Length: 430
Image 1 (cartoon, helix red, strand yellow):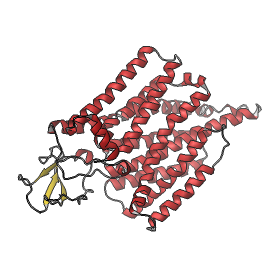
Image 2 (image 1 turned 90 degrees about the vertical axis):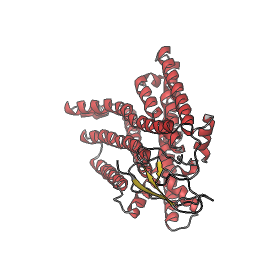
Image 3 (image 1 turned 45 degrees about the vertical axis):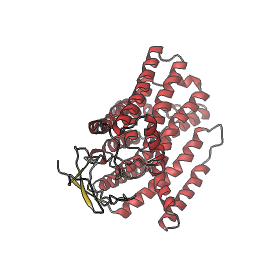
Image 4 (image 1 turned 30 degrees about the vertical axis):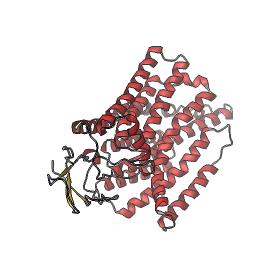
């Protein structure tokens, strides 16, 4: 495997706090962690040293990933000059490889979550049963009370809103991981976009969605995928990429408060005011950043909005589900235990990688979904006597063991004495 050039200027007397590095040539930082010096001697005096990234060799100078503070998650993996206190170079290399594989394996449970719905929709379409695609009996029972029509349309609206929100979240996180060159996470988000778009396409074929709406969604999805992968292969103009980031920033900021508000309807009045206000704020923030009216920290904050809003949108899903369970306890029996288990496994597989690369945003989202969406709903199912005690205890033991292993192996890989050190670096940075 050919080495990738990586230039670092530093002084042995006083390491630079902001080392210069060239990143675009590197196809994946998850596969480019180790650094190997051309010189076998330790640096002495002030001089520039040329380092090369090797895909499979560990750093002879014991360099490691620099912890990223919570506010700086939305940046590519940085490297720093200080020596790491490693107990075993082999342990670091092995855990780096394993966490990347775990992240890639998360595609399996996530695909298993979507496939049943896609297959069911396909069967209904092939059978010509378009009404069953969205279970809209009002199409053939027009004489029944209007309240039934209203209820079904509202449920359809919520379903469509959920899919579009998920689509926006996947596109935003895809852009986030494209910048970080996390190949496995890129595949996860891409499959999320594609699988959701397949379901939306089935709705359009079944005439359950107006064609103009479907065309608009198709344009956004195609544009997002093309721009993201052009940027991944360094074939995209920086100005065009920045425009795309502005679009998903405004879109995410608009969707988040609107989705949160919609969760509590009809307890609170139905309104588009939260989304409208957020849209105006988002556009103003983007314009001010473009015009140079914000500080450096302000611009950094605006650039990080899209990733965080996407994460918060997915984090809101278990809150929304628990609120629904609270209002209608009988709905709990309609939850699929296997689906909740797959959600817990899929998100749980992402936790070790997020912790290893010190990505606070990714760690927060995957941990929240694991504990509150997957496991949280399993708790609800157990309390409602829907699943057996053995099933629940097995899921609990597996989750606790997995989190414990992730913390333990990360501690060993970085040469720490306590997993609390790893968590501290995750939240606060170095």
